[in-house]
Image (cartoon, rainbow, N blue to C red):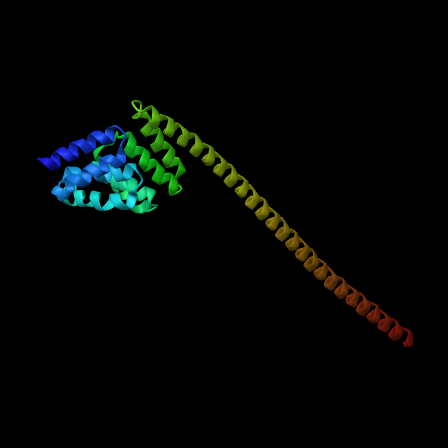
Length: 225
């Protein structure tokens, strides 16, 4: 079958690193049989590999429509949406792929990238370390993951340090506000107490005046007698 021949030749070209040539051969296979799932899947991956993500999606989604359980395609689509910045869609597909291939270093690596993009740095680091444990056969992927882990750990440490500094500043501001409030309360209470004391002094003075006046009156009456 000519379509099968083109597909196989395309796969060989892809493995040899001739991505554009492989796409041309997959195109020829699909020109003969537009529903040739293997050629669609291969071309979709070639598009992903060559970063032609918008072209990859139609091929991969068509394959997935025929075989919704194809975890490899879920992984490819997850990677595609990651590159397109559609993180929620990406993580949805990658989680499905990971459920089938929990030891796939590539899928775990992509999943860690999504987590990092979403800001879940601790989870991203743990996922990347897990991927690294399964990537021993790929020096390139190991080097990539080591770099990502180091970068994320550094940024996470910096983030935690900045968060700690911000928290300390907030605590300091709150303490200053509490101290100022306590000072104002103390001043108000002191003023209230002074006012109470002043009123008491006024009352005592009036009482003393009244007593003096009363004594004077008694003395006057006694003198008259």
